[in-house]
Length: 313
Image (cartoon, rainbow, N blue to C red):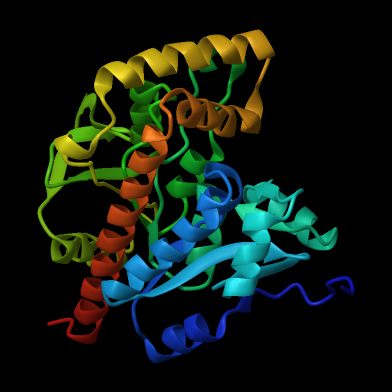
C-alpha cells in the first residue's frame, strides 16, 4: 500500500450519504474490536453492534485507521482487517496524526472516537465503558484521556459507566471538575460496567431517548458549554455479572497486575483478558450485552435528535 499523503478524513459511502442527507448516525469505536474482545468473537460482535444500530433506525459509523487513513465508517473488509491482523495500534487523540504519518493500522479509543466523530458532525457515540481514573492514580497520575477529551468535545456517549477495574469514585469527581455532565438512563445510580450499580449516586436521570435529545438541543442552543454528555445505561440486575464473582476476579486481576508490572494503556486489555479467562467467558457475555444495549439506545437517541432538529418547534 502506498503511503498516505492526503490526510483528510475518509468516509464510508453509507455514512457519507447519511451525513449529507441529515439522517441519524451513531459513532462506534474500534478498540473493542482490536483490543477489547478476543478473536474470533470480536469480528462477530463488531458486526452485531453495527446491526443493532441499524435495527434501531440509525447508520453505524465505526471509526478506525487503515494504513494511515482515518476512516469514519469502516467497511466490512476494513473492519475484518482491524479484527484479525496483528500489530493494530491503540490510538488515543494524541496518536492520530503520528499514526497517520507513519501509515499505521489503528483502533480508536473512546477519546479518539469521540473527537473524530465530533469533527465529522456525529453527535452520538456508543461504547461499552469509559476509561477513567486508575486505582493508585494518586501515585501514578494514571488517568484516561477519555475524561479531558469529553470535557471539550460536544458528543453524547452512551455507556455502562466506567470500567469497574478503575477508581469509579475518583472518576466521577474528575468528570465533575472537568464539567462533563452525567445522566443516568432511568436510574439515579451510576452503573458499574459489569455490575448494574457502581456504588455512587447521580444528580440527574433521564427517562427516554427523546429526553436525551432535548438535553443535547438545550446544550447546543445555549451555546454556553461545549462539553460532552455521558448517558449511563445500566444492565438489568438479572443480566449483570455475579457480584461475588466480579469482586473476586477483580482482586485477583489487580494482584496479577502488580506481580507482572503492567502499566499504562496495557492495563485495561490485561484485566479484561483476565476477567474473560477467570470467569470462563461469563464476563465476555456481559460485555457483549452491554455494548449491544448501548448501541440500541444510542441509535434511538440519534433518531430522536434528528427528528427534533427537523422540527425545532
